[in-house]
Image 1 (spheres, each protein chain N blue to C red):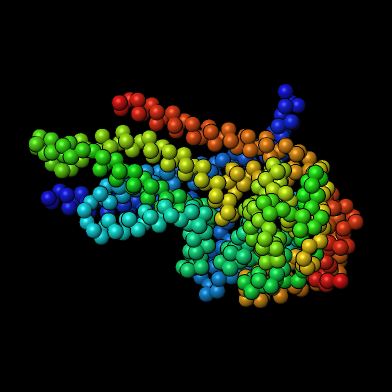
Image 2 (image 1 turned 60 degrees about the horizontal axis):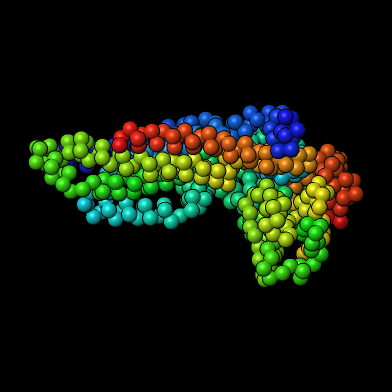
Length: 296
Length: 228
């Protein structure tokens, strides 16, 4: 009997020791590999880091897309590139800090800000009323509307053409998903978590069309033969802006001033010419770029 | 030969450091899965033995734990641990650590169930015979019950282990850039230049997953044969 009790106890003790040590061991390993930039969040009472705390730490965490060419992607040398990243690089330079890029997905951008795991989201983030309740948007730096791309064999030019049994591809957490759910609840949606998967699905013919930001679908149809943007502008015209954690006014004000002063040197036009011109050509430059945070 | 490589869209892997990047992603996948598997096997064995005990409290708590982990999709668990820990406790876990915690919790629960099932499948007369031979309870467990159970545990746990390795692809949702995410980045960066990149890169990813999981299956088959 004594032996059994000893046996039981040793299992319990063993379990807890193993769990404890293994977690500590992994913790050491995991944190060693990633940046230490987040460490100061623990000590402060707010979830976000103020402008001074970011400057003090020497590193800013910026959430960008890593698979959304040409806005945020990773080149063959492992370097982040794109329209959003070009701006992010400038932010890092003007703040005098290093940048730690965090690879985000459309569906987790708000969550990253709400938990302070990134300081700024610069991931083609469309300003919506709903999102503005959860995060603080800075001044816009780009225009966007929704668009629908479909194969040339059956170009959809109006949403009413979509049959009862047909599906439309959207990416979870995007404005396209929200718009269709609210305004066209009768359309069946096929939801994907990543851009790469949504594109594969369209090419495999899993659905009749793909609804997304018009920049995305225009670029897609220009790059891929056999696809046409039948609906180039759906819903209201929106803007794309950087976002910070709700209440992080020091960082928000700095960003707004930064965007205003960058307007004087036509920074976002240079950004467009460096990153987007290959995809959209010069004809979309003035309609897509918002300079100095002023919408015309 | 090269034209095949191009048709399949594998050529994008030879651009710049792309292949090394994919291997780096593979290392992240392996690191998360191997650490989680090691923790799951060790603690899962102990947990399986523990929940076999007749103690009501132990049974209730472990039942709730197992069912909770089994019902929750792994993606939800990842979000709860990665974002939830920051929201509720203000602890900032890295994506990799969160992944290891989630996969270990999952592995321990599943492994515990496997061990419990195998232990209880050893027939009663084995216990009685051991007692008749004058073995103590601990001796009975170590020399009689455990060896018989292990034979049943191995094949089912191999299934669990390969499932865990494949499910690690979900960690891209909490910002961890592992093999699948690197593959998607490479495909996307080359969307304009190489249309078949998706096919070629995923083909290579498939082969890499196969190369990890296949030796594990072979090992389990060998072990099964030897113990027959």
